[in-house]
Image (cartoon, rainbow, N blue to C red; front, side, top):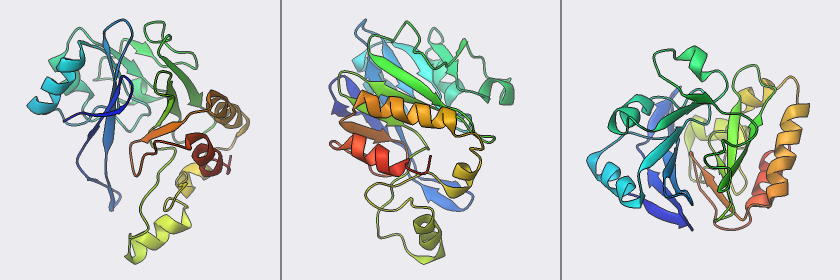
Length: 226
């Protein structure tokens, strides 16, 4: 169920979901930390085969949601691993009080994973702020919804809208309505620069094609609207 994406970093493909009528492939990530625990990003539906493959990497210690719309499966992961700590991105703890979070995600990484993973929050949006991560060992930028890259074979009016948004093709981008919600872009520009300063080689995203090379160039062009 898990496939190696880079050193100590693994991905699992999830189901295709409908979001406002558009079909989105989904993807989650798992990192083995240097201390031996497992860090889980944007967890998807938990199946026994997936749970077994995660436990083969190590004990789940941290469960992370990168933005406030990626919360559907958090509770079932926490029920499976009740000793794991749950981390909320901006806005999610207030939006979903029924989910127990142990800590908020900040611009600096939690000490539990700071040696292995860096992070930054793209702030300034009235609608949705996202936490972007950098996995050091594999030099991977881990981005959830902020960059979406879909294939050129999407047809019909939905394909036309996705092309108009810049979500189709080699570099991809951010949905147009989300871009418009960043009324104060200074913090987002600073976050984008931090991602570029990481000089990532790989790009892991939740929706669309990942990349094993050239991630910095993809990020630079995909987020040039900022």
